[in-house]
Each structure stands twice: as C-alpha cells, then as structure tokens.
Image 1 (cartoon, protein in one colour):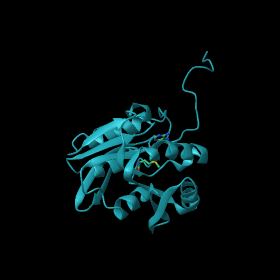
Image 2: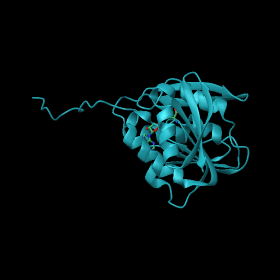
Image 3: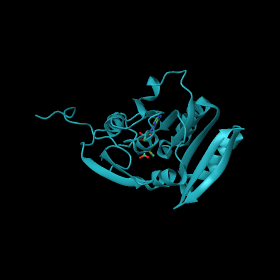
Length: 206
Ligand SMILES: C[S@@+](CC[C@H](N)C(=O)[O-])C[C@H]1O[C@@H](n2cnc3c(N)ncnc32)[C@H](O)[C@@H]1O
C-alpha cells in the first residue's frame, strides 16, 4: 500500500524557495553587453530560468557598471547574470546573495571564471562588517510588500556613506510606491531611467 506520507509533497513553488522541488532542467542563457558575450547556465526552479529577464536586461543596459574597484552586492542574484557583469573587472569584489540554493550553485558555476572575485552566499553568510559601494538588484517583488521592505531595510543601510543602489522594478508592480516608501525613510531616490515598463531607481543616502 502506498501511504499518503510517501512521495514528494506538492507545494506551490516560487522562485525564491530555498530548495526548489521542481526537477533541475538546465538551459543556456546568452546575452551580449558592451561587446562582451555571456553564456550562463540557468535552470528550472530559479527566477527567469530560460532567458535573461527583461527587467534585468533594462538594468544592465541603463546603468553603467562600476568603473573602479569596489565591493558590490548583487541582492537576489538568481543564476547570476548581474554578478557575471559586475565581476568583469579583476578588481571587483562581488557578493552574490540569494536564498535559493539552486540559484546560488548556478551563480557559483556562472562566475567561477570571472576576472573579479565573487563570493556566493546566503544572506546569513555575509559577514556583518562588509559594506557595499554599490548594490544592484532586481528585487523579489513577489515575496510581498512586507518582506520586500524588510529586505531593503536590511541591506540598504549597508551601503558605504556615498554608496549607491540600483533597483529595477516594474511600473505595474509598484515602482512608484516603492520609490515613495524609500523616500519616506529618508533615502534619496531618483528615477534614473524607464524602459519597457520598468523603472530604474537610484537610491543613496540623503
Ligand atoms: C526577481 S529575482 C532576480 C534574480 C536575478 N538577479 C536575475 O536578474 O535574474 C529575485 C531573486 O531574489 C531572491 N530572494 C528572495 N528573497 C530573498 C532574500 N530574502 N534575500 C536574498 N535574495 C532573495 C529570489 O530567490 C530571486 O532569485
């Protein structure tokens, strides 16, 4: 007899599950930026596992990657497209952070030949003392407003004094209300660019 407790329990799954239950079907994601071709491995169970997300694409095309050495955070790295770009400079130190273990493993593979240093980590693994010159994020809007606010309230204060965060948010998923929420908490928020239904927010200390 097959007991009810045997076999996998079907749970509705999100790309931010810590351990995705869905089978691991890998895909190659290719894109080009500033004349450099990227060929990354993505998979089922991670955000946008078949193609470069259009919001991420807007972020990468509208914001100039750092032109000096520094410490950078890719907040919610997924399979690592932002980290791969930030780690093009040999003097870049990138923290690629996510809660999804499959995403972290893919990011590790996708950046292991990058010229820069990439630390792939869960949020808890980032040492308390680390500060970031830039934070880049296509944040996980689908976690809900409270969790998203908590995420930003946790990481934005870890910017250096003149650090900058670049966030891409869909207009219809609340870019303007997020912008107001940040401004109400004394962050300086600038609408840096808009394209294809996304806004790029530039966030810094006032
Ligand atoms: C919109 S996706 C962006 C993924 C990737 N940066 C990209 O552009 O394809 C947001 C990511 O945030 C991650 N995430 C969700 N909650 C998180 C948390 N509390 N801390 C860090 N990352 C989180 C999700 O697992 C997901 O990979």
